[in-house]
Image (cartoon, rainbow, N blue to C red):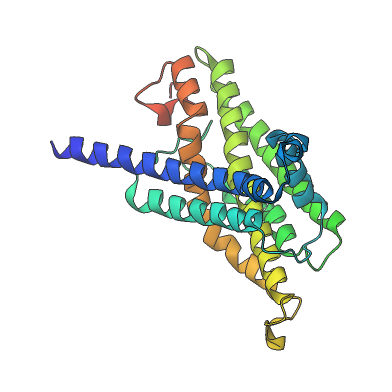
Amino acid sequence: RAEVVVAHTHRRLRSALYSMLLVSIATSALMPRASLALSSPGAAAMRARPTMLADAAQLGSALLANGAAAQDFTPLLLGQAGVCGSMLVGGYGLEKFGDVPEPKEVGAEDGAVDIYRDSPLRYCGYLNEVGEAFRPLIPVEIVYLSYVGAITYILADTLDKGRKGGAQGGEGAVVRATFGAVDTFSWQMLASVVFPSFCINRLVVILVSLQAQAYCPEALQAGWLPTAAGLLAIPALIVPLDVLAHWVLNGSLRKVSAKVLDCEGIETECYVGDQ
């Protein structure tokens, strides 16, 4: 009975965190539309607005293309801050109270050194986060290069895991290796690029915007302070966003791979094959 209660509690926790994340994302997307509806003179202005997909594309382009210039504290910016906060709270909550299994690495061998996970090379996965922290102080082209470095590292890790998975042999080795490589790429992109870059970008922009306010003390207006805060945030983001990325994939890609590879119930073993 105790196991049933624990499992039920975990399911309720996961559902609550998932709902909180979706509500935060929806709020950040819909707040600007609500503001426009209040100020618009008629329905024609609403029809003239671009679609939500176009808005999202424009927002993503702005996040990547612009320097960390001061912005007004609009509902959109506050909503984005809420999304980041929900991601952190959700990740720490899952780590503390949830049960988020992680699949065994593709081709992992006991005692073997994986240069992409066990050597200084792994720090290449943080290049984009460092680039986002330095965005107020450096040309935006250098920020682009930090993303190129991080994604190059992710692609190399993905190819390595696919190669190791295929080398294991056995029935369905190619399919298993393919799913393992896709899983590696998806998790790395979420945990190393998408989630942390968004949070650090918004943190830095919010701090730059606060510095531009008339009430900000002169002692807090040093240009390096937002960068320092962004760098200090990197280690604080690792655990919650890693766990959150696993949780997202456990509810999506890994359900598909478990069905295809016939390893439902032992999902953590899906990519390792018959040892």
